[in-house]
Structure formats: C-alpha cells, structure tokens
Image 1 (cartoon, rainbow, N blue to C red):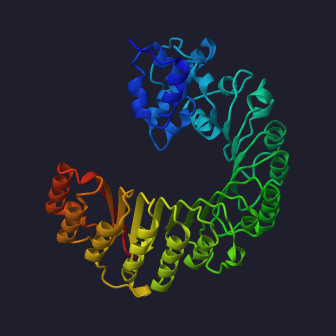
Image 2 (spheres, one colour):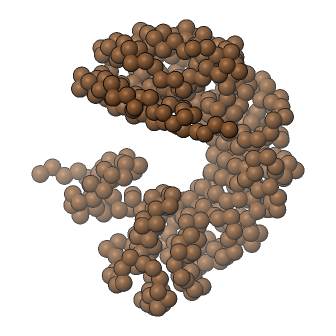
Image 3 (cartoon, rainbow, N blue to C red):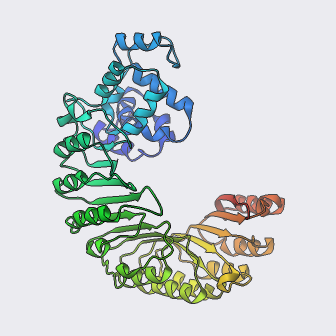
Length: 478
C-alpha cells in the first residue's frame, strides 16, 4: 500500500486546520495520522470554547486537570469540584504542550468554574507557561494580577510571541514584564478604555521592531481618552512603513491612516458620534490596498478611497450606511473603473442603478462572490425594486467566475421572477445562493410559501443550484 511521507502528510493535513470535522474523521485512520492531527487541533483549543457551551468547557477543564499532579487533582476532588469524571488516567498525549495560543481570558473563566486555591492556579499556569513551550499568540484579560512574566521559563515561552491582545488599562507590572519579553510581536490588538489607560503601552509598541497588523477597539462607543489616543496613534505611526493590516472602531485623532502607505487591508467600523468630520480621509491614497471593509462610513469618503487605489482592490465590503441614488451611482462607477481584479463585493444597490451593476459585472470579470443589499428607503427617494430587471442583468452579464450570490431585502422577489432567474442560469456553473430577509413583523415569506422551496429543490435536482440558505432578520418597531 502506498504511504505518504510524514512531512508531506503534515503539510496536507495542515491545510485542513480550519476544517475540524474532517480532521476528526482523519484521526482514526492510523497512529501516524493521529500523531500529526492532534498537534494541529490543539494549536488553538480556545477557539472551540466560544459562547455558552458549558459542556464543552467542562470537558476542556477535565482534560486540563488530567495534566495536573496527583496532589492537585486530589485537592480539587476534596473541594467537590464539578468535573466530568471522578478518576483520571494519564492522557495519551501532552495536549497542552501543543498549544501555541494562550487565552488567559478563557483560563480565568475556567478558574471561576472550578473551586481552586492559589496553588492549583499556579500549577495550571505552569502547564501553559514554561521553558518547553513556545507560544505565538497571547490574549490577556481586562484584569490580571497574576505575575505571568515571573513564572520560571516565561522568558523562553514568550520569546517567539507574534500576537498580543490586551486592553490599555493593563496592570503595570504585567505590562512591564511583557514589554521586556515580547519584542518579537508582529500583531497587536488593543482595547482602548474610556479612562485609566496605561501609557506604558507606548513603550511596548516602541520595543517591537516591526508591527504588521494593528487592531484598535474602543471600549466605549461615545467617549474615549482623546489625549491617550493621540499619543497611541503617534506611536503606531512609527511603524507605518510596515503595517499591512489596520482595523479601527473609532475615528482617528491623527493622520495615522494616511501614513500607512503600504497598507494592504483596511477595516473601519465606526460607532457613535453624529458630528464626525471626515477630513482625515480626504485625498487618501492607498495604492497597495487589496481589502476594504467599512461600516457606517459615508459613501462619499469610501468612493474617494476607491478612486485612489491602483487596480489592486480584490475585496470590498460596505455595509450599514444608507445613501442616495446619486452617491450610490458614483461608488458603483468608482468600483468598476478602478477595481478590474475585484473578487468579492458587498454593497447596497438602488433600483435606478441596476444598469451600473451591469457595467460592474462586465468590467470585473474576476468577481466570484456578490452580496447585494436592496434598500428602498423612502427617506432616500427609494421606489419599488425591479426584481425582474435585476435577475435579467445577473443572468446576462455575470462573469463566468461568479458562483455565489447573496441577496438582502425587505420585500421578497416574486416566485415568477425567481423562476426566470433560475431558468436562465441553468447553462452556468451551479449557484450557491443565500437570501436574507429583513422583516419587521416576523413573516418569513420565502419559507412560509412552500412553492419557493419546491422551486429551489427542483433547481437543486437539475444542478442549477448547488446550495441554498434562507435567513430572516426580524426586528421590532419602536
């Protein structure tokens, strides 16, 4: 029987890192496959603990406890800790040794679930932080008073750290220790607090040689320490030649974005502030920008950004900002005139600009995913949407590469218009279609009417539709 070289097998299986179900199936192939997959699964076990899944968290705690000494396990048992099993055997693998991510937020939550004393807490920290582990990602909680930098072996453990997430009011002693140890950081995520910010963060940023990825998250949507933010942004500007990815949830107080001349990815998600000015983005030139994501940013501003890119944009995602027909037309034109290599687009389209959508489909021949938001708000002069015209344009002018379409709407298309769309798509590649209905009264038109489902099932059978999903977003009026 043919056997793959283990190094080759590792490279193959590593490509399935985010496909947990497939990895689980591969675990039972044989011992070699198992020994390769376990480290992949345990590289970042914290990602499986999202949400309020208590059973998964207890299972994870159970595995952690199995790595503790007999004395610690007996102590927890004497405290009547709620765990899944009463007896432990030594695990087949030292699972914790495979961890490259350490989420101290989740670890603190674990301490709250079990009844622990300081000795148990210390031993659990030592399982993750020691001279034999090399962490690459560290998530620090809002409040941490445990001196993780003083744990034996911490200096070696954090020597290869690439990513750090913390808030700007972090404990000074912990921050000082991290500043000394974590000079190899390339990515940083900072939660900017409303007050009590630690200016020691500036020293940590200056101690790093090159920052490639920066995420600034504002803890309060309406109020923040402007002086601190100014100092923080100025410290980041010193890395402007290296920063490739930039994410921000507040309006900058400096010209930091215009300084990012080599930026590849820009994400702006602005909350609050009705009196914002956008001068800081005027005439912004980001020639190497490939990905633009924006929420609640004026379309006029985004149009200027798109115009000043040099044919490099491959992904544009613009949402939660309604705008008039004129501005809608201008941004669609800016996209198809300046983004010939576009692969993904999420954008609002008004009825009067369906013709501009056709121009976009013709000029962006690499487009493979399209998310159309339909908003006929009368506040912006909207009118009844012509679904038939939209479907005619999509079937006639879509590039061959387009295989995934998502439609977001209030009023659902008629059954006849959908049938027309599917009938005229049949000579193309099978379509992955999603529909999202924004509904104020809770009526799910597409799922309520069985005829829609019958039509979709028929198209699946005929190979016109590969996948179909319908969701309803229901909200209550004032």
